[in-house]
Image (cartoon, rainbow over all chains, first blue to last red; front, side, top):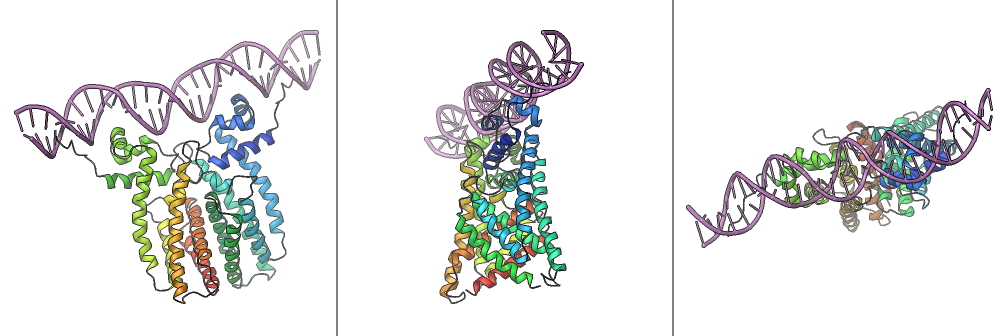
Length: 199
Length: 199
DNA sequence: CCACATCTGTAGCAAACACTACAGATATCT
DNA sequence: AGATATCTGTAGTGTTTGCTACAGATGTGG
């Protein structure tokens, strides 16, 4: 019994291309034709490997999350809560305006509101955003235990606030905000964080 | 020459229905069939009155902007810059979680990234968001002239910051954030505003 | 009352959509 | 080498999309 003909394309490279298309046009604005062209494969290969358009999105999101986790590790390993917030905000400003990617963030531009039959998509994106928020919260819980944050500080509130600001930066990036503009917003937000962190 | 048969539906009421559908499903997630059913009219009536799907969206956005302007007047008429920011943030938290409407805001949920052929839609939404930002900036320029804000304060930065936060709140509202959660975020943001306003 | 202009409802258009049947190609395992 | 299992490319499938032709309805102006 043979194991069959091996696939002729690199799945991860193909996912990177798909990610870019979903990011730029949103889930519903993306067509299979655009995806197959960007991935340089034909529809049957796409469906054999990923099952469906939504399956492909999930695979792309998984890959996106991998990269994001690596990036978040760097952020979370900062020594103080303040530095965590600073890195998180500033690197978001840079990443969302990185010319190598579409503006904003896949987890926001991918689709906040979708049509009948794609209701899972916004849900899926939201779950990944929540993950980031949870990582921040846990880091701030630790900071509180280490007396790096005041007794009256609520880690959940801090994490939610940072999450909200970076999501807002995505919206502004999608309408052409420059890196400097986003950094300015990040800087103001950091002051709020400092005030809040005093507890 | 007669003036023709008069239209049998109220255009504004129909626009309110259309607004709700676009808001809930996004521009590309919305179908003409959903629109005609919600508006209780048939396709020919829709096209005679609004020209196209995109024309209908623009008409709905115009109507949305009317209501928003009236609302912004209330906000901008507050006596101090601080109170303007407070009203802006808090009323946004309430509006975005008003059970009478879909969560978030039409100008964000409507579509940040669209497909080929609908590239104008994100532009159109962004233009309306920028309008709100401009109104805030002008109000803060005035506040500065009235010595209500410090000499070193940049009205543009303040306006952008508030705009970013409320956009971020839209993203969180779309994934089910409660009114209390959004108000918490608004409260933290207000502290940043205060710090920044000292200049 | 009659001519006219515009709206309404039915029915359906061409194009684009997500997805797949099928045949040939290319690997593995015995 | 032969049998088998999976991939690839061509060429479609049925469905849904935004949109409209047409005929009848309903108002206005003369």
